[in-house]
Image (cartoon, rainbow, N blue to C red; front, side):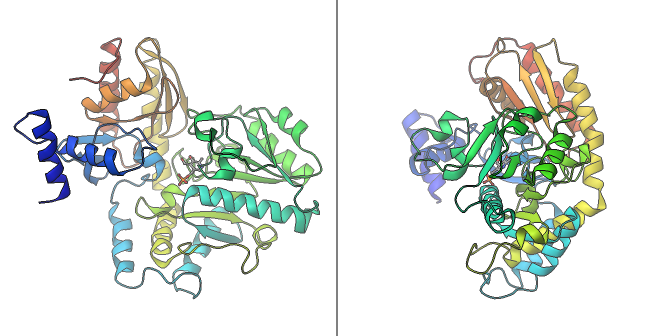
Length: 427
Ligand SMILES: Cc1ncc(COP(=O)(O)O)c(C=O)c1O
């Protein structure tokens, strides 16, 4: 008997019910032993395939969050799983103390995809952001000539770049910040989408601008048309690195390889993560030219797992899949369908729809209920989404979703909205 079965029996006995609920048992175990730093929906996944997740009760759900875009290519994508299996049978980890025959091919393929010279492989998205900031500061002192310790970085209001101490230091989210000080200095925050404010904030000690081309956690906020080209020009004119955090927006989600591509903008530094690991391993990267990444020398930065053979083999496969362009095309075509259908709900419980490709932020009329309540109603109908702020929902299904499935998802959403005011989970 597993601990889950024991727990299921205990939970049902306490509730006086006959049939032990595996869902309740799993949640009770999480509650008791896992730190409470998330507030998940009461769905306990046990298997997944393509766009679908199956829970411990055998119920199927269409996954419209795709692990915050880490599962862009679908759960257990066969090509990625085959690459992972092959590498599991060869070598998984040697650390960077030795070379592996997987690192070079991965870095070469990713650098070429990005049109850059070099790759710094890391693991989580937050690590890529931290690493990008370290590289920018070092570039500031070594190349730009900013006095050591005096470089500043411009960031955008309502940003989300991760959860480390430095990153939360320039977040506006009080829940993410409160109690975690002292904070890292050296950041200036300006409104997202306002290139004039950014120009005014840049001074001789500015080493970088760090932005999400489309703000994800803020509710899929697409900037004005001229914003990214103006930021690009500003950075070139003022000798400042433009760092694009494409950890959530990149790798086909918006219909292009990078969200920046929609505006013909090439940043100095790409930060990548999530889908780069194919939904199998954490794999992130800082990608830039030699005059930027070349500022790092042995001992100045590192990670035990960064660029490990298993991750590199999977990352190489992901890059190959992106080079074919089919996932970008799917996101464009199916995204048009998703946006058209969601726009049709404006005035029927939806206030606004934003986004690009298979990525939509939907503002639900607060009179209907909070994002969390609507998410619970959708889960009861077999659709998994996540609220971002207040009454905003994010639809970001795996890019393998079909047109029929998109229609079905939106039909479920329309049905929830038609129920009117929702305040609690369905019975
Ligand atoms: C734009 C962006 N940057 C960085 C991160 C942090 O990535 P991770 O959770 O892998 O540390 C996220 C995560 O949601 C993100 O959306």
